[in-house]
Image 1 (spheres, rainbow, N blue to C red):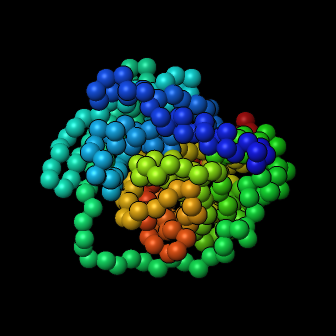
Image 2 (image 1 turned 90 degrees about the vertical axis):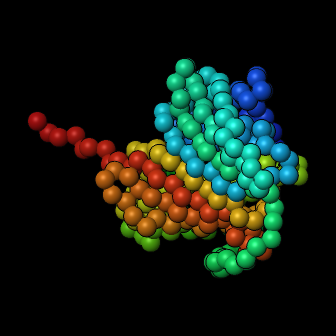
Length: 299
């Protein structure tokens, strides 16, 4: 995927998030295949947040979302999003969204929106990391791993992430298979092009990206390469985000991720997203199924 393809890829992603309103609180969104043959979880979460946000007054922005992935999405069928207007209070608005395919729920999300107000102020410090411009792009770094994961995987990954400029600060899990490392991974990301000033759009694009690498630290702790090397299989189970401060998804954001634990076929990822000038913008938590395939036994 060449840099010239990035603007078209971003436009395709924006089209993906531009849901069709088919009833007052019912929306329909297109699907597309992710790197694996199912709908990317970040796509469903972002589309659900779009649906919720389109039923909320413009002076209120999302401050949190909590979601569960129920079934694998079919990339060949559209997704219908039904919005339940739980509450419209003086300061907070609550929405519940169910994503449906083939008559069955595949995902549900609860989101809360808040009017801007003054309050107490403090935050964690942003970790010291290299500037994003000093790090290789995906197009520069991924081909180095073709001998490990295969050229086909590299090509699919470049295509799937063409709308986002995502740069690893540290070696990704598939670059150090067999080497147990600290369960921490940091990446810089931004969209591969400028966006409008719509705050909801920036929140939705950060939601989309947040599902890409959050379980990497679990893999690092065990020297596993993940689905790219076939030494684990897995999927997202649930996802939560808290939006603390305004940010733009078309400007560099640092995604600082870690994993405190994995057990019983599940791994937990926790993360903070900082703006380039050090403001803590988002907190993220996700649990996912992470299973080690059984080795074949000789009879």
